[in-house]
Image (cartoon, rainbow, N blue to C red; front, side):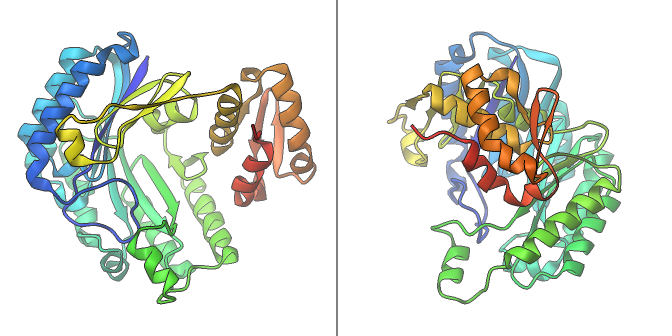
Amino acid sequence: MAGLYVHIPFCKSRCIYCDFYSTLRLDLQSKYVEQLCCELDCRKSYLLNRTLKTIYFGGGTPSTLSVADNERLIKKIKSIFAFDTDYEFTIEANPGDITAEKLQAWHNFGINRLSIGIQSFDDHQLRWLNRRHTAQDAKQAVELAKQYGFDNISIDIIYGLPNQTIDMLLNDIHTAIQLDIQHISTYCLTYERNTPLYQLKQSKAIVPTDDDLLNEMYDLIVNELTQNEFEHYEVSNFCKHNMYSRHNNAYWQGEEYLGIGAAAHSYNKKSRQYNEPNLLKYINNTQSPTIEQLSEVDLYNEKIMLGLRTTKGIDLSQLTEQERVYCLKAAQQYIDKDQLSLDNKYLKIRGAGWHLLDLITSELMKIE
C-alpha cells in the first residue's frame, strides 16, 4: 500500500499567514493539469505498482480546479494505479468554492473526504486573515457537503491570532463541534518569513500572542474536543469514530508516497525527492526532481520527529538497539518530569509535554 499526493498550487487570493507554494495564475490551470498527467506517466514506477491506499489533493486551493480539469486528472490517476477497496481520497477546499455542481462531481469521481479550510468563525478575523469566505459561508458549505453524501469531513481552525481571546476561541471550537463533523485540525498561527503576517510582526503593527496564553488555548482545545467525543490522535488533530486522516497518518508512520506537482515531495524510505516550487518551469517540463539520500541518522531523526507528534508515540521496536539506548537516555529527564511516558514499546508525549514538543524532539534527535 502507498499514498499519492498531488499539489494544486492555485489560489484566488493569498492568506496573510501562508507560506505554502501557491500562485494566482488561475489561467494556467489546464496546462498545469496536463503536465501533472505527464509526470504521473513518467513517475508511475516510483511506487513499484503498489495499490493506492490514500490520495490527497493539497495546495494551494485544489477546489479552484474546474470539474473538467479534475476529471481529466483523476481519470489519469485511475488509469495508472489500482485503488485499495477501502481507499481514502481527500480534497482540500475553500468554503467559497464549494458548490452543488462540484460536490456532485467530486462524489462521482470517487473523492470521499473533504478538508475544508475554515480557520475561524469570526468574520472580523477572517477578513484580517484575507480569507475570502464568511462564517456563514463555512457553515453552509459543510451542510451542503453532507447533502451530497460526504460523511468524512474535516475542518481547519487557527488559534493564537493577535487579540484573540479565550472566549473567541471557545466560540470557534463550540461552533465546529456543533457542525457534527468527523475531524478537526487546529493549528497555532505561525509567523513564517516572506509572508505579510511576518512583515506585520517585524514592523510591530501586531503583537504575537504570548506563550502562556497559547498554552492555555491549546489546553482548552484539547479539553473541549476530547470531552465532546473527539480523539486527540496527533498534536494538532482530532477525530471521531476513528476517522483520522489516513493520508497524513501514513506520513507520521513513515510510509511511502509519491508526490507530483510543483513543490511536491516524495518518499520511499531511502530518499526524498522534490520538485522545484516554480509553476512555469514545471509546466514547461524544464526541471527534474531533486533527490536527497537519507542517512541512518536522518532516518532515526525522522522516526523521532514524526513519532512524537502522535499520541501513539515512537515505536521503539522500529529503532536499532543502539538507537533505543540513545533515545531512552535522552528521554529520561522528561520521563522523570512526567512529560514523556514509556508504555510497553512506545515512548509518548503526555500532559505538559505537549507544550514542550519541539524542545523534547530536538533533545532526542541526533546530530551528524
